[in-house]
Image (cartoon, rainbow, N blue to C red; front, side, top):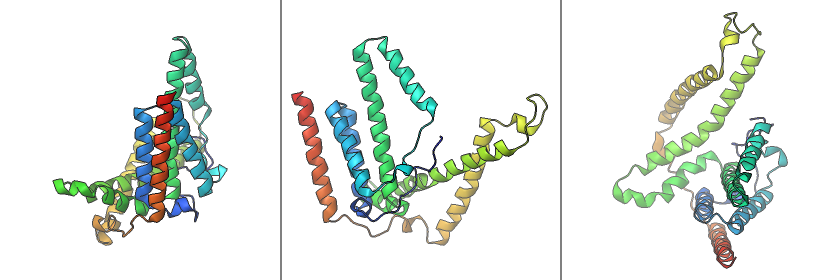
Length: 249
């Protein structure tokens, strides 16, 4: 993806959004996503988009941090729209609504990553899933696995970009010369990235074991505060308003 900055990293800041509990942000994203998924109306999508934009402004997210998809991404969206035009205006409206839903959900998820330290994700997930302990489910292990996946995604993107840059620097050769530079393709880069990811995961496992195991990752004493309650109430009122507008319209 042709972007100047990596979108899956925390943007430093000390705003109200940054100080919110990580669990509150996850709950808000889940509620907004569930509402727009069950009720994908324009009022609901507009409300979620407004929440994302206002939150990004409050958090002070710079324009340079916004990812810039390549041209073929927008080309596929336009091609899909032209294809749905053949089936009538109703199909085009449904298609545009689905595309908007996907973009809004991705934007809200990235916004959480922009404003939340990765170290706070595992404790928040463990706290939110605490009721599942009644069924003797491995809540802490699930929380750590999710947090490590989120932490490893930017590293994997960095690895793919590094491999792609290294491949471009290799000497060019005719397609049928048998030179390794001419034969390396996408599958080779993915294989090399997976090999590097396995090596890094082994090193990360040793580091986690040396620091006391996975239990320490999910035991950070962070809890919601008064601001989190206010945010949840505001989001609940906004969701109710969006649902009411959808029913009335």
